[in-house]
Amino acid sequence: MAEKNNYEMKLKYCPNCGESLLKPNSLLNEYWISEDTAYFCWCEVCSWRGEIIEIKRVTAPELATS
Ligand SMILES: [Zn+2]
Image 1 (cartoon, helix red, strand yellow):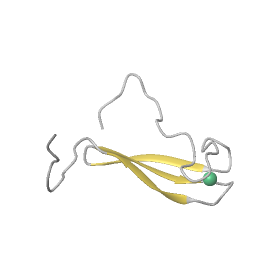
Image 2 (cartoon, rainbow, N blue to C red):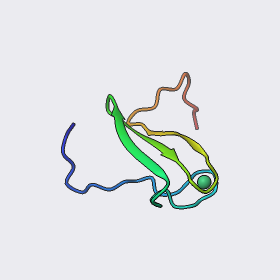
Image 3 (cartoon, rainbow, N blue to C red):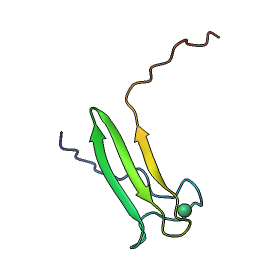
Image 4 (cartoon, rainbow, N blue to C red):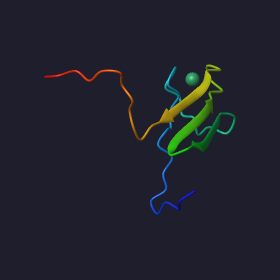
């Protein structure tokens, strides 16, 4: 994958309880699906676990007009 100069983990907090995912017993793992960035996280405080995917493109069936 391409090197990033300003590397930063964008996901830092549990989406369920708001605790930091950077605690030692929590898990935050970053990987890539094609050009999207996925974060697998597990929160030690509330046991929420899941994946959050940052996407580069949105595919929508119909765009709203303004
Ligand atoms: Zn949590």
